Image (cartoon, rainbow, N blue to C red):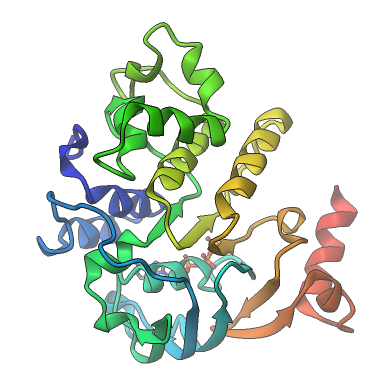
Amino acid sequence: STFVGASFGGIAELYAQIQKAIGATERVFELLDESPEKINPDYKGAQEKIKGNVTFKNVAFSYPTRQEVQVLKDVNFTAEFGQKIAIVGPSGAGKSTISSLLLRFYDITSGEITVDGKNIYDYDLENLRGNMSIVPQDVILFGGTIKENIAYGKPDATDEEIMQAAKQANAFNFVDGFPEKFETLVGERGVKLSGGQRQRIAIARALLKNPSILILDEATSSLDSESEKLVQEALEVLMDGRTSIIIAHRLSTIRNADKILVLDNGKISEEGTHQELINLENGIYKNLSNLQFSNS
Ligand code: ATP
């Protein structure tokens, strides 16, 4: 496998992003082809701390391989420091694309994305990404120990910091239950962790990295309710004090978001709190909400 050991440092975030695309082979190759400055083995994390105000202004975007399709047409929103912003909308609406653009995996066609008022393309890429973490839908860990997988967020972390992050992420107990504890190998040649356990490892990794901006790509497949509860709790801890952008597939987890954005046909068509949006007559969110909650 291409990704072995923790020596690859900064590749972690990229790898996390690739996971979502597995199956979309084209995209995987695109990402693996990143220039060396994008995959820097000497990655040391963020040198300059970002506060975490995010703005999309009239953002339009087409994937380079499919220029005839405008995935985002005119996206406008702001996420202020410390806020939880949820993005909902039908499959294929472009929710994940928004997170890829923020991470600068692609260049926008027009408009502007700013972080703390500065155009994201004016940042040093490594520094920008050093201030962001993504917890993807389906976490795939690299072949290595649990410790290495967590420490990816901060290569020089001490054992104490790693353990602390694991505790906060509700991962400590299951890790401690393995005979080899934090030295347990995961991946193809190691133990097989459940989806919820892998997510908690990813949350521990993000906690350790301590980013200002967090992107959560919510899992579509539901976890069993105990695991779900542990993951949700860990996410609450993780989101505290950061700007979080939540790509939501289930509405139940975003009711307390500061702002919900409904993405439809490449634009934000509704914006507000859960309460505000369910009061919109004939609103998309209202309809989605009625559908989801009448089925559960
Ligand atoms: P879901 O809820 O199913 O995850 P989404 O709202 O996150 O969907 P995106 O993954 O952002 O949607 O995709 C938006 C559109 O862009 C879709 O039509 C998708 O097929 C297309 N797309 C996504 N990734 C690529 C790519 N790498 N190259 C070309 N088209 C892509």
